[in-house]
Length: 269
Figure 1 (cartoon, rainbow, N blue to C red):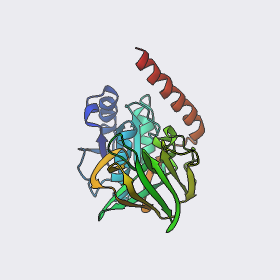
Figure 2 (tube, rainbow, N blue to C red):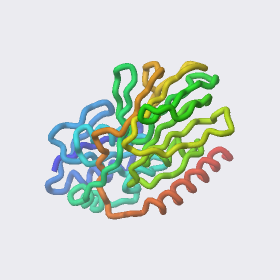
Figure 3 (tube, helix red, strand yellow):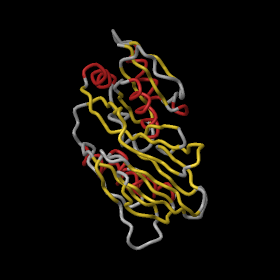
Figure 4 (cartoon, one colour):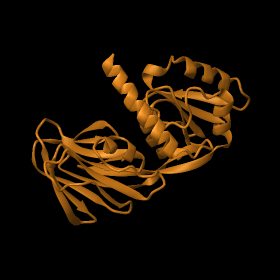
């Protein structure tokens, strides 16, 4: 089995990664190939093994989805909410998941703006590029739905509902739901609330005034003007290898509570 290994550049020398790569490479039938950030996944690879945290997983998930290759993540980063295995996983556990793990599909977003197209696992955000708010009109399936004067507007998948949208007061969606969240960021109004719409909906965000807006896809600023952005469910899906743990709510409580405490401790230090 040929496996593409994708690692955050600052973590290539991490001892957990080094140990697991050495052990997996020594196993019969395992052929590992390191790929660099920005490098395409080789067409002959059957799995992608990612080392890092959630940022690494966002990038790896889109890359693997374009190839139709299942992804397995080992957390050696910070939060690790998207990774299936923690840093304590043994080489045998990783190998078993790579060889015989089932596949779970997660929704991706397709975002189009100014002729460019992007995929996102978590969210697409139209936000102010300065401290000035922007005025954005929301259309759902061609129907005017609301107008926001705010710091920006988030369109999130169920996976992304636990990320930026959660921080902006949005609801948590179970990953298997077929729905999207539309969530204004710090709206300058008393009536605006997050919306949950069908995953089959086509969402358009039109910037009609205020400060200059920018497009942010899975946390990465895209170098185009975000005057009109269309978001819909992508034809591709992110493919995650199933390690046999259906523990979304347990992980939600554990990871989110521990993350908040860890950040507080760092600030206090």
